[in-house]
Length: 165
Picture 1 (tube, rainbow, N blue to C red):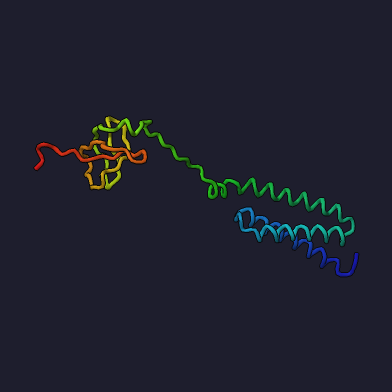
Picture 2 (cartoon, one colour):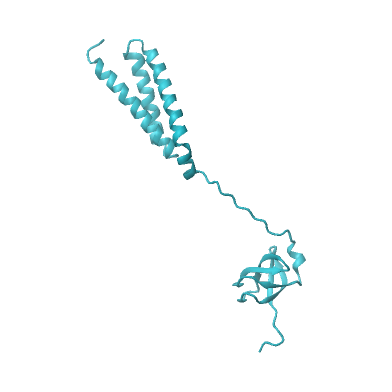
């Protein structure tokens, strides 16, 4: 063993520890980049120092790779679900609106389910469709009639009751 051999071993252990910590940070904080680069550099430095400065260094390098792989597998196994729930969106959006051609609604009457200011939803015999008013505010539960279709969106007009003043 050379003089200062324990310092070399300590440096190798510190480089491997730094590599594990930095690569773990990279896994849990993706797209940071610097930690990943420094972690890989630390691991490569530890491997090179082991090969060059330690007797039978290749055996120790093999041990380093096995230790590092085991650590990565265990970390993945125990921390996968915790961080995956924070990073991966599992919800999906489902739209199950009726398949109605907007042009088929021309001249049809319905009841406003929400206020049209200027857009809202109107019930056409059970089919609730998003429509626009002609620009004026239409109250909820008002009777409307589709008078036009602009950009595939029906345009509705308020139907005036005969008994309204």
